Amino acid sequence: MRIIQLIQRPQLRGAEHFACQLGNQLQTQGHEVFLVSIFSGDTQLPFNGLHISLNRKFTYRLFDIRGWYRLAKIIKCYKPDVVQANTADTLKYAVFSRLFFGWQGLLIYRNASMVSSYIKSPVVRLFNDFLFSRVDHIISVCQATCADFIRLFPNTRSKVTVLPVGLEIGKQQAVETIRGDRLLHIGGFTFEKNHSRLLHIFQRIQQHHPQLELWLAGDGPLKNAIYHEVAAMELDGVKFLGTRHDVVELMLTSKALLLPSMIEGLPAVILEAMYCRLPVVAYDVGGIGEVVKNNETGWLVEKGDEDAFVHAVLGVLNGDSVEKIIDNAHKMIVSKYDNLIIAKKFEHLYNNLINSNI
Image (tube, rainbow, N blue to C red):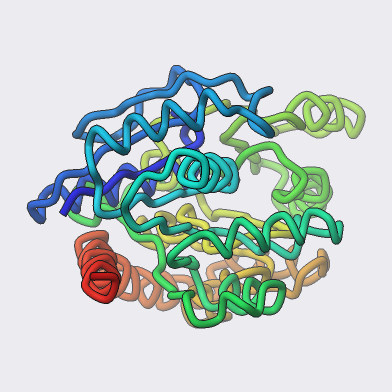
């Protein structure tokens, strides 16, 4: 089987990272996988195969017939059985490339978020309805994103499958180590991640544990605003780490992962934390509640309830049932979210779709 994984750009974001890991696993299963990025970027991606970049400018993303043509040339050259579009921008390029230039092969869209949180305008909804009508199948990252997707686009009900993200279980060394006096957040500085309120949550926690630090790993458009907010609050102990390649090491030396996001799909960072036996405290949004079971595999808090979030983190720091909960979480990740298992599910779906299309 020949497969193209289509990504927005080389960047250390969940969608691109998982596309690379999935591609590597599919290659070990004997398939040919090509990674194609739409926009330019300078990040080294963890992909072992051929990576082709269209090097298009982000400002062209709304209408780029030359980019659609270049994508069609690549697809006609490599003749993939499956083209998987992994973000909204890649979906637009793939749909219009096939529509204008008529290439063959199944087109699959992978949905990793709650689309209703982004699609508000009736015009935007109609446009996306058109795009989704042109794909052969849709893969949603969790049950919550699937239900949300079908509610917004009911005509897609018959062609949506739930397949989660996974981890490279054998390649991550989750060993016990010394936990430093720090809480950890990993994610881009965007409104979804709720950094501003995280600062207020941390301020309250620090009143009980003044030695604690809050480490923020990631980059994004709101980083400067959050930096200035830290200064305005005169908040000590907040460290801006930027984009990091040593996420596992950060997790192994922290006391808890905090994720007070307002919008999520199924973030891989939670799975990574659980594998590293790092306690997870998160708001119950998107598919988080499908893996973070309160007082069973983590600490799940109702969205926006900062009092409960602070209480949960203090419970973790005080050691309330922590060992049992992180053991449960670790066992769940190893048994259900190994990328070897996940890739076989993707392979099975691809084969079924190809056979049904013959």
